[in-house]
Structures are given as structure tokens and as C-alpha cells.
Amino acid sequence: DQTHQNFKKAGVKVLCIAFNADGRLLAMGSDTGTVLVWDLVHHAPLREMTRHAGAVWGVAFSPDGLRLASGGDDGKVVVSDVASGQALHSMPGLSGGVNGLDFSADGRWIASAGQESAVQIWNTEDDNLITLRCYQGPVWCVGFHHSSVLLASGGLDRAIRVWNLPKLLALLTAPPKDLLAESEHETGLRVRGTAIEAMPAKLSIEK
Image (cartoon, rainbow, N blue to C red):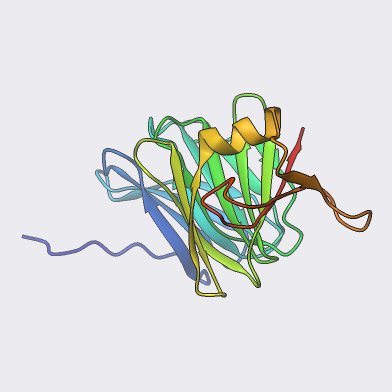
């Protein structure tokens, strides 16, 4: 007959939360840089992992529930093993911090929203990194479509952009003529014309 459960750790503020796919686990990002995982079946803490230097603003389980991604003020995205609590991978790159993140439904990609006007898409299989510099101000949120083909992002400039991931990858591997190199003061490529839904963006790939 219980209508709710309370989970609390003394001195910790909860900044973000995410369920795993079967609803048995709940992850929480805190203001202290720790990520907590609660077992909702046994009403007990399962893991407490210190992952970030600063607040954690985004957490997301992989679709199979085996991995947990987290991102925060330090600009890193860290992927942890849920069962052992060990850190598996770390992706630096967003100097202004991570505001939110999401796993693709196929478990291959992690997208992160950046404080400094960027969306980053990380291939967890080969560690390739796509950076989209496309906003005038912070990007607050990202979310994958269940097909893993589309990625939506939203930010301070009040725009929602929907990215087609296969088209982005095609542009990076075989750029068409309407992709022009940036000036010497900028990096990456700028999409012109109608290449990606007629939306300007700077693209770069790193490894």
C-alpha cells in the first residue's frame, strides 16, 4: 500500500536521475561529484561512485542496464560498470561542462549537451567523437530517438535541432562539395546549404 519510496543521503543534493530499462535500479547524480545507484527492489543503495570533480548533471543507463554514463561540471563523460562499480571509459572534451546526456537505444552512442555551445556524440565501440558546434549559448539537453538514427538537442537559443546520425557520419567520411573548410582560427567543417536539414553546424571528428 506504500505510495512512494524515499531515498536520501545526508549532505547530498540530487541534480539528475534515471531508471534502468527494467525499472529495478535508479541512478542519481549529485552536487558532490558522486553517482549513486539505488536498488528499488530491496530498497537499498547498490553503488556509490565518485566520478567527477564538481556537480553531476546527467546520468543515463545503457539499454542493457550493464553500463551507466555520467557527465558533469568537469566536462567529462564517464561510463561505469553497474555490477562492479568500476570505471570503464572516460571521454573528456567539453571544457564548459556537461549539462545532460543520453544513450542510444542500440547502446553504441552516447550524446552529451555542453555548456559551451556544443553537442558531442561518442561512439563507445571505437572511441570516435563527433563534435557539433551549432548553438548560440549552452546546450541543455539531448535525446535519441528509439531508432538510434535521430538525435534531438535543445539549448539556450530556443532552437531544437534534430540530427540524422547516418548523414553526419557520411559527411565526415566523404564530405560533399558544399562542405567548406573553416578559417585558420576555427577547426572542423561547416555545413552549407541543405546538407543537414539546412542547419549550420561545425563538425569535427576526433579519436
